[in-house]
Length: 371
Image (cartoon, rainbow, N blue to C red; front, top):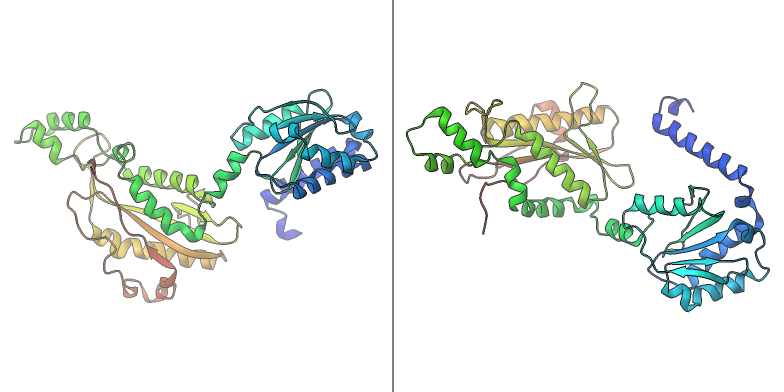
């Protein structure tokens, strides 16, 4: 137990379980034979009568306690009835006869759907049973949520099923490259024309304003790495079944830009973000930063990523791959910044970790519509 004594997440889990036990024992209806029988029947009937939609069955507490003796027959009849099949929500009595029904859609958002069912259970001593397509039953009593289901609507379930797993991360990177060609994405990284015109007034170049703006449209905002990191992180969160952590702090006080844990929670991956190109200064002046592929990427970033891998292994982390992602905003079309990276770029003591290093093909960002 001492292993978990300082684990905040474990303590939180114990507190939740303690609260769950207290709620269940304080409201004896959950432990009654009638309730347990009804819960089992609803799951069994869903297995017999398969369907790809969610259903709500709402019944008053008093009717649960007075459940009819032939509930198994009545539950089967309910699941086969036209009213049940044509409506998302049915209200039933102790005989599992339908009192009322409606086909109102459930909230699509998972959290909103859960709050909606909880709010229903506060009314009129109702118990709300949510029947999922896979026969998992969640139930709601007095505004509390019980059960093992994690999805509360068909939309949230389908959305999750379309998310890619960690072994499909290369596909996600490829899709993200397409995203970077969309104007609403790439424009956020570059200095807008209005600011370039203001800069033109400050520097007084010999070329005319229009030519200056055109020739400097590749200028990035100040500290663009933060923008690149946030955009990629958000994209991964929207399209993958992974846990995305923001800038994990290592023991030596370095930070990982994006940490990914697989959906099981066992395997760790991280992405280090770099960029090459030219950015504007902090006061919107021309004196910004310019990075080239060398030494920015090779060897500096390679050493940094493999160094993080080494540290994570020393910290007993189950690190699988450390990715290096470079956003290429250079004015010229040049070869990939990772071209020619080899194991001997690393200090001898780090070379054993080179197989865990992965340089992602550059994310090319250009301030122009590709059409």
